[in-house]
Image (cartoon, rainbow, N blue to C red):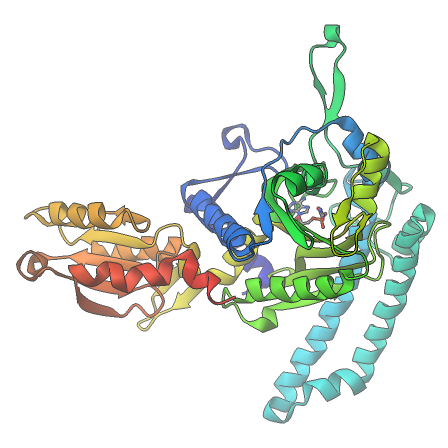
Length: 512
Ligand code: GAP
């Protein structure tokens, strides 16, 4: 099945099984805004817990905060967002559709990369076991020709972005003969800058309302609380502040479902370090964060770092962790060495001294910052994409199953009485009432047992137990494993011990 079709199936699966709904669905939705349903919210909460615990529980020098979405408007002047949080946009005159000029060019690069992958796939097919992929990539004429095009385009694009040369960005689009996916024409307007922050009014107009912004990142809530936390927490460098919260961006091109949203959630951690040590910490945090991702067991081959060539004005190093989505490798997390830019800017704009007194050196300085920033929704999407499978069963049947990491699954155990009579529902409820204090259990009695198993597979429940007539005599149940579909008889008394460890966030944290 084409990857595009797989992605469409994942999107409809998310809706059908209560993971993600379009916002205001009965009014036909709102562009790039989504609601999480009964299963989605559980998965999302588990992702957040996994992140929060890995930061705040596993590091005795990281603490958390929860800052407000609304912030003083000067924050965004100081951070540079008022003047520079822009995307270059371009319109197609025929379709009237608006695009990000940089995304159009990135898509073009991705198309070239796809061509290389097609050549490689052909090589595999042709030479089978004898195929040496590395050598093929280095020597095949067609591959080298495409790679040269990619390199040239990449360098021209990087230069144009670095200088924010809007005319050059347009020229690249023209030279590359990039057409509008809707109208198919190349009738493009000029490229213009577009600020991504949402603006609103605080207070009534009669009182003199203040224009404020919905925060476009959670990080600034951490920077402006640096002094509060450092002093009240008596924190010594190096130390970190972690936060999970909503962020808002008026994205020009909102697409690929929850990959690029206008309201989304971030999990950010700012790690304050002594100037001069930041590169060591940058490398350390890159490794730590990659280990966090890979502990989910999706396979190292599905991740890669993308080190930035073009750095934001405040950064002296930056790298993304990319995950292989059905639409290619895409950024899920950014790790940035932000220097002392933010704290210095806030010191200047607020007039407050924002420094750290280092008792060892007996001097004060502005700490440098390493930031790790991951989108909850993108993480959610990557987990969904990797877990979704339409599994071919013996006998021609197909089952749709979500192989979610057990610790992240919305429901850990489904408790299913074989029939709705003879005391089996009561026995099942008794088990739920005992186990629900330890992990998320779901009681289900409707439909055949086979249909109930399928429904649980589709939401990624790692374990199901069936209560039958034997249960009433010997206190045993049938325990079914989601992935292997193997069934075994176990004692009710043993259920907690068998399941709890495997479905706990702790089990995941231990793998990091
Ligand atoms: N404080 C740094 C910062 O915000 P970013 O690269 O703009 O950096 C960090 O965003 C992460 O937030 C991204 O890696 C992505 O996972 C997530 N993110 C950013 N924009 C998003 C959007 N429109 N929709 C969903 N997630 C988004």
